[in-house]
Length: 422
Image (cartoon, rainbow, N blue to C red):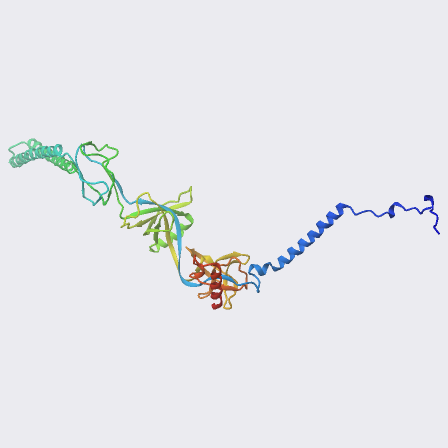
């Protein structure tokens, strides 16, 4: 019944290669990592396939909200911008021409004075005495001249009758000439004394603004005083000196030779507020070799005294004007693979890429040489995620959705309504 158990020696032998080994842990880890990488690749590939539609470039993407602008036509200027310094056309330091005590000061600091107005007076008594002395000397010498002339007439009559020697006549002629020279010298002395007496009254040599008083009344002043009495600066009109690159010299010179008046405007430091309007007067006679620029002078009437000497201003010089050209806002200009282009708004509420060739720029307006026509509509806001053929919703700058108190849901609803109306 029961079979006898065979001995171990009689049992069949099992080789080492036929025994099953458990899988190694390293192989399991590598297999898991490979599986995760494959899953991640599939997820990334699926997201890349849907990215264009989410970015607004696909035909089936949600419409993007944009702000359009109608391409216009008008004038655009060619301007040169530079930093200038306000410079007075005349600055005079008032000094005395004679020595004496300053008896009276007839101006107030900061006054506007006219040419010929009295500024100060110097003690005139010494000069009045010198004038009286010179006039007395002149009267005495004129009397001596008349006496010599009478003697000369008498000697001439006697010489004609050979009553006096010719030597006496010649001596008298010389004496008359000597007295005439003395009289002329006396007249010059009188004239000099009169001028010195006039110098006792110091008057303004020009129209301008009086600065701070440099000498007080009662001081003894002399022509050698270095500081003078006061400084008068002309403010109306006034000029602005500013440098421009030497490359612009030929165009400026050509316009001036043609008789053109080049308008110049002065702006504040931020270049946002216009201070005054003027015109270019001339340019320097040589170019600065260290900077490669040439200085220009523009003159301003400065009736409101908005410009002040040594003030720094931004100058905008209108060199020329391109009239009746196609212009757009610089906000609509895009740059990329097609070069310089704009997004053109189509009638079916889509946009298309339109390459354009630009001309000169004036502020926030730029000239369009080719690529657009007046009446076209371009995108000036919201072009960040647009692509060729993308659908759009058109809104204006005054869209209520831009109001600060509009909530998100209401804003979306209104933008949607605007898009349907467009």
